Length: 88
Image (cartoon, rainbow, N blue to C red):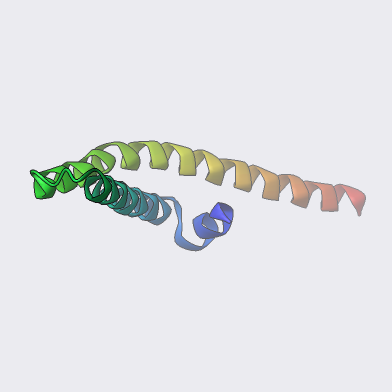
């Protein structure tokens, strides 16, 4: 599934999508924890922190990860092409 996104959107846009998704998940989890624990003191500040941390980490990690997946996909496509050429 991720391979299809990489082929369609490219490495950078897929990385941006992963970053935005991780930010939303982080904020959502933090919000749910705050609601269930009853700890709503500085809720806005905590939600901002929950958004900033993935914003700092996810772009670098996702760019590396997605870039490697793109290279693997390209190598697999080239191998499949070579197999077809060798069989003919």
